[in-house]
Image (cartoon, rainbow, N blue to C red; front, side, top):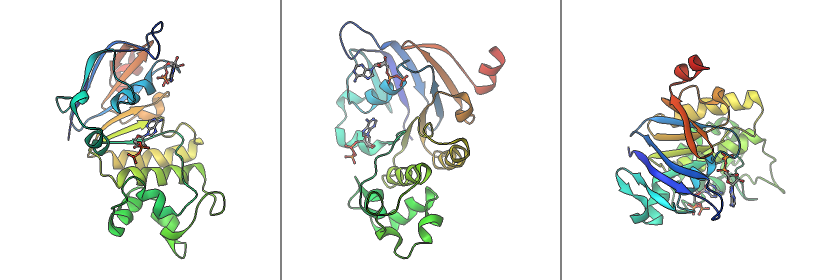
Length: 229
Ligand code: ADP
Ligand code: ADP
């Protein structure tokens, strides 16, 4: 499993406003780090830089000790799987939605991803499970079901790194707990960076970083942070 390191990373979307200010942190190989902080703190920007949607103005981002500026877009995408807040599903079959981005995936791989995302019990009850159309003209999925399809889509790539960008923020509390359990399970063998705005959703993180105005305000374990407040 790869490690992730941000080294004095500064970034702004435009010249007159700095979003990240010499930010440094590390996600040790195989560990789970969560980033929390108020809305606008720069949390999602961290995920976008990791994917190289943007490049830092200064500083470096390393995956497994390698500057991502020198890594191909293909290997970066293969290494990192993201579960976003609002996953967009296509008006197509469940199978198509899971295999999207991995068109060469075998039926077995799709089934495994579906099982790991715990969507299988749900689609199992349908006659032609992977051929079931979802969306406008097909089966209407709930928010939680959509997230499970999105998790399966990520898992079918078998990425060693998992980025959860407010993956459960749009869900009701009960569904959130179900999806969090699944995410805990699927992130077990992966280096994981979870972006959240509530401490309650990241109870299992090895380390929590509190971001404020693009800087680390504090960091520690869940218990340490609770003890300080
Ligand atoms: P968070 O995820 O912590 O809520 P973001 O990283 O999304 O914060 O955003 C940090 C700041 O950058 C916010 O003030 C936001 O308005 C600004 N921002 C985000 N995306 C863009 C963009 N594409 N162009 C300009 N400003 C942006
Ligand atoms: P693919 O890897 O299948 O070609 P994309 O090119 O759409 O997929 O995106 C690459 C990766 O970035 C995908 O894992 C996708 O989920 C993720 N991604 C797409 N849009 C965003 C976004 N706005 N913020 C964060 N991640 C995104």
